[in-house]
Amino acid sequence: MGLLTPDPGLVFWSALTFSLLVFILKRYAWKPILHAVKSREETIEYALAAAEKAKAEVEDLNATKVQIMNDAKAERDTLIKQARELKQSMLDDAKNKAQNEADKIIESARVQIEREKNEAILQLKEKVAEFSVDIAGKLLEEELQSTDKQKAIIDKYLQEVNFN
Amino acid sequence: MQHFRIAIALLAVWASTQLTFAADTQGENSENEFDPMEMIMHHIADSHEWHVISYNSDGEEKHITLPLPIILIDEGLHIFMSSAFHHGEELVEKGNKYYKLYHGKIYETDAEGTINYGEHHEVLNDKPIDLSITRNVASMWLSIIIIIWMFTAAARKYKGAPSAPKGIQSFLEPLILFVRDDIAYAQIDKHKADRFMPFLLTLFFFIWVNNLIGLVPFFPGGSNLTGNISLTMVLAIITFLVTNFSGTKSYWGHIFWMPGVPVPIRLLLSVIEFIGLFTKPFALMIRLLANITAGHIIILSLFSLIFVMKSVAIAPVSLLMALMMFMLELLVAVLQAYIFTLLSALFIGMAVHDEEH
Image 1 (spheres, one colour):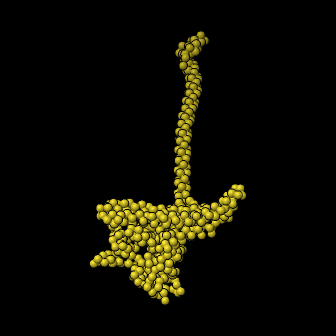
Image 2 (cartoon, helix red, strand yellow; image 1 turned 135 degrees about the horizontal axis):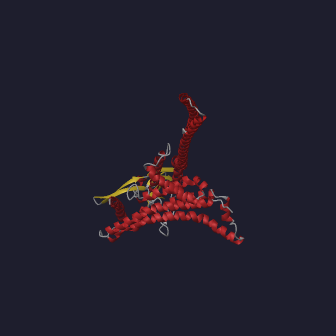
Image 3 (cartoon, chains in turn brown, yellow; image 1 turned 45 degrees about the vertical axis):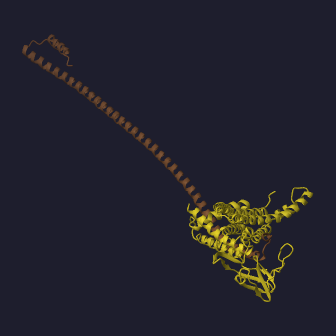
């Protein structure tokens, strides 16, 4: 039964030693260790959360970047399209204007020519009449037989002459 | 393979010290009979001197032992070294009393050193109050030096900014976190557990380290401290005190006046629960003691086999089986520390738990 009989000496020393050990370790080991471990866990947790947040932010940023780039591309496309259209319309305008101007100039030239032609014809007619009269006069002078019949014949011939 | 060789070498050394022990007791008792019982009991019991090694010199047993201080309280304080007893062969005279070291215990005797026996061969002599630094106490102090050194060394590494664990820190931290997360936080409400952490951590490492020291087969190991009822009793009592001094109203309510059951059953339950208060630490005490002592006894028995059989041929068998037991005991060492701590945490957890109805 010696095995199952507590020995007062050992009871005393082990109670004392164990209490002392708890006290010493509590002060010099468990407190600093557990405290450090806890604060490290918190640091790690915080760092992980921060990393997660940063990752989300980067993703956001990327999305925004893509969005901006797409917008810019679309804008560029519209701008180019507009410019192309503008160029076309300007070209068309210029062409039309030039055509009109040319038409006008040609028209007015034609009118001018017509008028001057008519004028010239008129003048020619007068001159011809004068010449005819002169010729007739000369004829009369020459023949001295100037009759109305002959003048009528001349007029008739003059009428028949077409200057056109 | 390297480890295996070391293990074999250690076993061999241990066997030699233990077996010279055996040879020693052989000389004391009867002429030629080897008494394994005597040897084993001598080993697992406490002792007033710390046996280092024995050897044969000219057919004579020589012992190298470390004398330990004897502290007796018997009409005054007597302090002297255990070497004064000359392994029990001589009486020590202090004041006007004579003390004799007999089977590891100190008795008061007359000048001739007579030991009186009762009917069942029990010693009737008076015993002084013995607060000696025995082998177990010395072994315990060795263990706390190791523990304090390890953990203060680890604690120093935690100074400064948080960083990844290094060296001894990375060895101890998982163990500390194991005790914290899988023992304490698993059993005790988390916001209340921190208060008990120093106790539980100390308990776990104290038991484990002492179990391991007990397994070291040569000086300064081999003492059977955690297989000694005095120590397991102290630890169990501390658990009992910690548990019951932190008991909440709901805990006591559940013990003495179980809510939600009829009155006659309440009375019955209160008796059972009251007994349970004491059986819990009692079971703790016996479990640790029995497991550790049993391991020591089995390993010693396996080696005794060689001498009981009086054959060297049996030695390889003994050695192999003892080696297997050793491996098992290494597991048991940590397992018992775990169980003791886990159950302490469980009892504390039950005591501090606030019942939500």
